[in-house]
Image 1 (cartoon, rainbow, N blue to C red):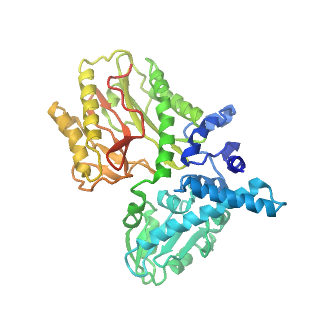
Image 2: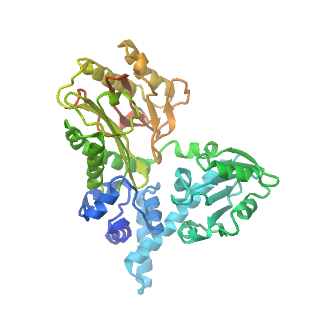
Length: 467
């Protein structure tokens, strides 16, 4: 029945590909995902998200929830018992029912935790499609635009969906027991539904990444509530990753790690940055068909001195330094890595010294990581080494940023952040040196704070520049 459960989930993945539960024992099953795809499908998927059904999003959300192996075993056992008494149900269908039931239980748990963090009597949390809403409910949608689609969660644990009528079928699978659904049509507008959902609420913790127009609409209501940042509620829930989330992030990290040799090999004289980026996207998707490419930066020659260069049409030249920064999203969680290579031997004689300085700074920062250390101390460990080498003014950014559902999220490793590291925090360590109009070097790995120190989710950076 256990294999039947995996098979049932697999049949519901996008494009017919299996979705793999991210409890630890099944991570390696990702290697069995078929890589055969039509040319048309491959071209469409290079760097653009592929549409998924509401059911597949439900299952993806489940896969990265903190379920122990024993809990999963109980669910499978329950499915087997029901199978023996319900002969008309296929085993896979019974398994799916148990998956959805367990999903809803976990959604209710996260909603309850978020409601418990609302500090003001009668206050509410309003989230629109994005990372926080996905974290709480598993719902994801990128086409709402000017139509308000939101979840309103109150301190007492009750919650309402505000949903354009056209999106009701997509939201329905994500509703849990007791949730109201306030559907509205284009002719009605969302104003009445919004007003009803927040009536009597003194304070709304409003989604920081929602359209500003929605906030203005909220504040224009009669007896409008005060508005505060939603991050005050969600930040603490997402800051430290649990075991299942860390396993998902390791799986995502392996995809980019495995692509590094090929990415470096793409960097040949005469090829443009955009050509290299396209090849890199294809290589990533080929390794993990269930993943989407989150971003790529290819910065060659003088462009490597721009930390966030926009990949362009410049062809690489012999001796160029090239920064490759890329990541994928796999089952909701992101990876992020940066390597620096050169097209043959570096043309600039200072490259080797700069590269070694950045690598040593990265090692100093990694060595400083452990619970209870302020974020600023990790930044200082890398920055002081670079300053001592005479490149302090060329280190243009913080040492690291948090990673998880989003590419950039707390905590931030920067000189003014006194926040203490905690077990389960995940962030990048990416010092860099950028010499304007010449070249730049950045090296990035992802680290997680353990009970007694640090663990890397990525392969370590190369000690010498790759050619």
